[in-house]
Length: 253
Length: 253
Image (cartoon, rainbow over all chains, first blue to last red):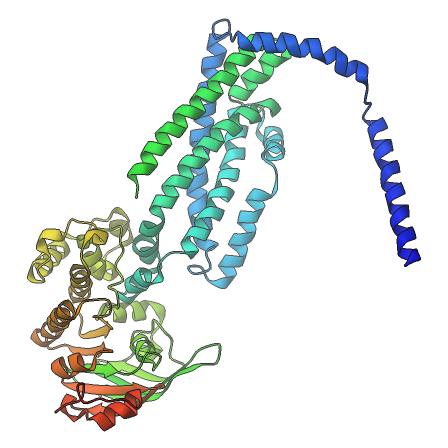
């Protein structure tokens, strides 16, 4: 008993010591915090007066590029996701295919998008291509995982009936499986398009193109008014996108 | 037309569903299979077109050993066996016409199936069938908008569009009201008779079986305990199939 207590006390002391060392190592300094306050005020003031005009071209191109990245990545991701989802659904795929597909899906989802983006920037250089590649992979993993779960929940009787007509594997998928998951597929795709647009705004920070690049440049030259305009544009596009996708989803049942 | 030789089925978890079923069904015979739920009726039917793989024994349809067929030949064989399901097993989000046309998938190429463009003569046949089954005005409606009886007619049309030589029918009247049930069964039996098809019909409703079948088989715990004319179904026979109960209203007499 005393032994365990002693061990616990030792651990607590060690943890406290480590915490103290950690605080010291990040250079915590009240002075620097104090200096930050007036900067926050300037930034806040500028953010309240967004400037859409001075760099209108950059803003316009940035938004267009982000939309393009989001659209291309969603489309490419969907094309990749469908076979992955079918492979990762226990009720459709043979056991060996299932195991491999599950691994591929997990692989697509394993790394944070920022890290994948840095990797692709190194591979293909700065610009929207790196962003589109990153988000295609992320979309494939995301959609495949959700869709596979959906496929595993379909009613088996209609698919069995299609098998009984002598239809081939692909036809069973086309007629027995896909119609059943179509509403979910539409919903997931629109949701992912929305995510991809927002993500494309972040990926610009590591040089993967899009409105994020514009935002990064604006911050770089302390041009908070333009940065504010970028943020408002992102919010605006996301809101419009959400309204549109709600409408479309309401129609697909 | 159909011959079963010692067909047995043991499921992986050890449950034995069928014990060496031997059976001969000549062309044009309507055979009703009755028995309590869990007796193996559904498994028996699915062993014929190998939706369920029999563990041992042979299934011979029109002189061909179904149990020995490779995948492609098996699909061709399935195309010549029409199957009608409990609760119709239609794809809800497709139109009635598309559901009926699934009966032609086996002879429709991949690209045509993908584009959902069936051959004109197949579409014409499907529409004619739908009209004869009195669902002609509903063919362009989604099947989830149809009544239970109408949906079962779509299921019948799908099976008949296959131009089958054998009909397998699994509890076609489950979930239908008594009047619709009788109408649907009459339709199935008449369709089989006018094409002189052999038909195997699983039924839980003994009076319906007596009324429409040429021959009745009683299945209990995976074995045949009665095989004879509907008129021979005495209270003693019913007790052998279902267990002790007052059978005076169901028995022949």
